[in-house]
Length: 305
Image 1: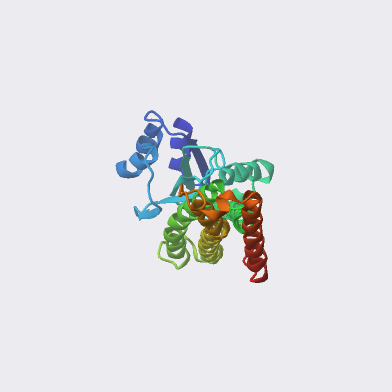
Image 2 (image 1 turned 30 degrees about the vertical axis):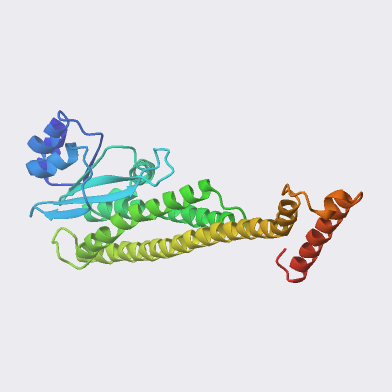
């Protein structure tokens, strides 16, 4: 903490402090050394989910953005938030779980230090840009899953298929919820609204905005395709039910005249001539067989079977 305080006093160079799973004791660095606003510090410490936002505290910007949580196994896409404090010569990042965007930037810094050479606004840009880029693999994965579900819905719809479709819909909804507000945040950073974002850095934020627009278009397209897959599944299930009902109806239709004949000769009347006939039993069976076969042939000619 003393080293950070001494560095901030010099107002030179660039400092990046990354904090993972911030505790109450870690908040001392944010509140006493950086002198961040208590509400911003509380957002970093709190485990509640906060919507994407940007707050201007004149000397620094406080930004909350969301990315994909790749460190949790779930059938539904989970997101995690990244809090950024952007000052003139420092960037402070805070997150609850490991994030690929932060890890990749740390690797680049350790490798050649390039992300630290152009200033705090460019470093913040690189972190946000990496976070947005890491959304694309999830979009591509959901696109492939959507194709698989469409094939299952057409050729072998099962209850598990419906569950997978609903999980995919929830994943797309989770992405859409974070992309729309984040696009507006990046748009504000790219149009010169904040003095901490220099003019030469604004065009790079505009590039992130374009990426978010593309992600939004892909997610909305996925949402429409998933709705189409759901309709395909429901239609397939309905068609299968209709086929089953048609077969059962035809079977019942074949047995109706047979049951009628059996019912007639099952009555216990004394004066029924056929009951005394030696070949009556075999004759009735023959008649029933002819009727059944005739109905099957008729149904086949009508292409009902």
